Image (cartoon, rainbow, N blue to C red):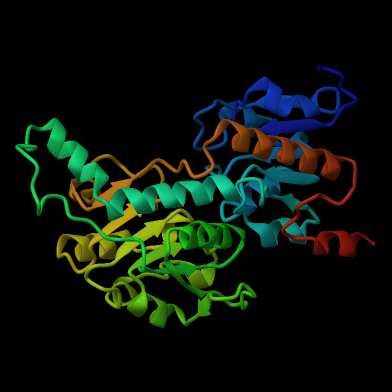
Length: 327
């Protein structure tokens, strides 16, 4: 659509056309490459005239970028988290920031359980040994893992995804403890401090947002509270864990195993020392990677974008105070 009367929207990544069909006829799109890790040269050149920005979590939206985007009226982030965006800088400019929570809850919870089961039963190690010829015969002591039934699962961050994981884990007979600023009204779940949760849990799963107080929440001192038999799962944000400290604890078997769908930085360089550990499973941030979920995320991001361009409140806005300031 080349109608110059329509607002210009920069889309940082190429997405399937049917995912963003809602935008047709409502804006002019300039689109970046599918594998972008920063704003492309073409998109940078159009910042000054852009009224909307449709972005993914891999693109930092900084105060410097916002200073160049003088006409920008809305930012729509195709992610639940917005740690890639300087939200206070957007708020000070009256720019609403949309995100896509809810639609990825079940898919992320499913992947959390997949990681949990994989490392608890040592599937990656067993597969590697089978492929390398180390499967000699059935062994009564080979590849011994962790029972889920009766184990204590500690959930740090009992939001939508944390609750969805808890529901799944309860079906495996696990006991649920959690750490969160807000109490959960689900019967049978026990609220603990983060430190006490780490001490008591057989498996720890992270589902807290990345904010200043959770950056490197699990540093060497906090990791040292975990049982030597414990398993750590992270499908939240990479910078919640100090990866150097995690490496030290895993290598020394002070923690039994870890499974990470998120890292800091992303992507984690292939030469990173964590890849050398057989008790650490690393995935390339695929928590929401199902056909249905990713499409729903894109469609919700489109809805947020169109609402912002029309001056209407977004379905999901992380800085709703911008609307109060405009009244």
